[in-house]
Every structure is written in structure tokens, then in C-alpha cells.
Image (tube, rainbow, N blue to C red; front, side, top):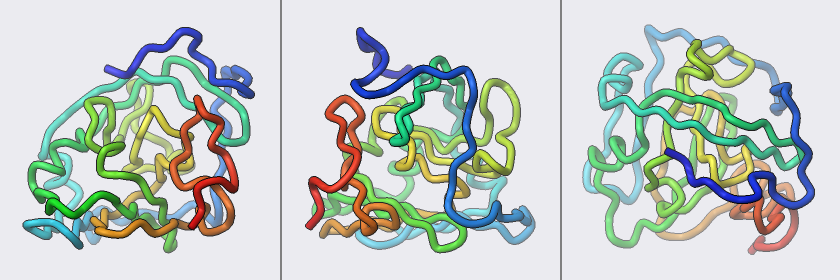
Length: 193
């Protein structure tokens, strides 16, 4: 399960019962017949899965709080999906791989560290609060990294690229922080190369 903090709401955030829909560009339409999840780069074994094959890698649940960089927090979200560690076991990152570029529909990317991905509470979610994710919230697959601002939890995720050098993703290249820790208010600017 997720890390429990006291207080639960990071500095500068407010609590909401709503789950606002925020993203760049249109909501993509998924065709599960052609959908693939690809892992490549600095790994021992590059892999590609169909949707059903990816879901068969394992099952995990996490109850966590969601913190958005736009300053809202939604408490007690239940996500279910494939544990990130199940994917890491399959591809075996090389020793020099310290970063991951998350690739999603529409060319969207976000960067995270391998360390941030390799946690018990990180999942590739297809359910939220006991129901399938809605397309607006990332169905058929959304990465959930509870300890970072939620822009790092990419919607419509389609793959991972393991890197030996850090590169900024979409929002990071536009001025967002490279890491995005809500407890340090790593929203914008600092941390860019």
C-alpha cells in the first residue's frame, strides 16, 4: 500500500471530492486489437505486449492520495492494475539505466527515475475505485505514481524507454520540474537542465 504521511495534504494544496479532468490534446480512442505496450532502451530484454498479455503480468491494488500540480488533492483513491515491479522483472533494466521516459498516446512523454518507478505502490492502472478507468482519466492504461505530482502518472501510457541520461518529458521541457515531489512543492522551473 501507499506511504502514509501526517499531514496527508502537501503544502499549497486543497482537498476536493471531485476528480478534475486535465490533459493536453484530445482523448484518444483505444483499439485493444492493435494496442501494444513496448519497453525498450537500456534493458536486458526489450519487450512488447498486447493488452491482455500485459494485464496477465500481475495484479496489484493501491489506495493513495492524488496531488495535482494545479494545487488540488483528492484523498483515498483506489487503483488496480499491473504492478510496475512486475514489468521491471520482465525487462531487467541495465545497471546504468537510472531514468525512464514514459511514452503515451499522442506523443506525450514524462520522465521519472527508475527508483520512483520501482516501488510497491506504483501500478499501471486500468481500474479506479472498483470500476474501469474512464477514457478521460486514462483508459485503457494509466501509470500511477502516488508520491509524485499526478502529471507524472501519465494517461494512455503505451511504453517505457529506459535511459542512461536524463531527458525532460513533454511538460518538463515546457518548464515543469524534472522530479515533481509535492512535499517539496517541485512544481515548476527548478531542476531543469
